Image 1 (cartoon, rainbow, N blue to C red):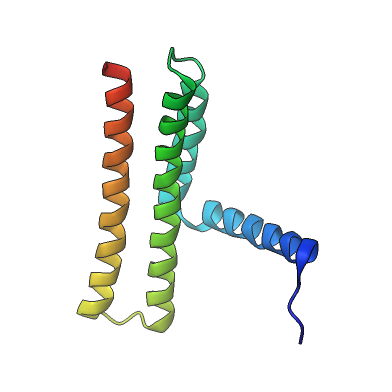
Image 2 (image 1 turned 90 degrees about the vertical axis):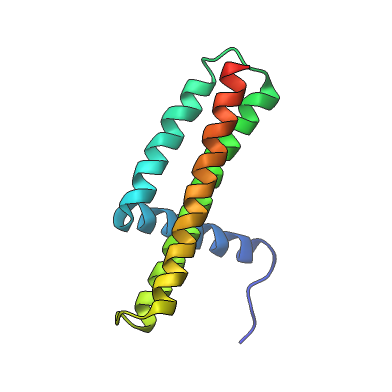
Length: 118
């Protein structure tokens, strides 16, 4: 079976990405909250007296939180797919993902505070 190429591949990639966004919004409460925060903070950034580069950094760091959150959700889903039994390695994988989300939230917070308070 030949793989899709060119525009057809791009079309299917967009479809799969759209399905991923819809699924994340439906099934992942943390992602929903971060998505709402992203929309609100992005809109707010256009009302603030900041440079275009500062606005880009502000928006990008909040978007980074969502990227890491969805990767964390993918890890959790995969671990749960393999087994829902409690296991220290499964817990460790989930904890690492959660910690990655926390670190990106701290990066976003530090970025916003640095720009707003400088």
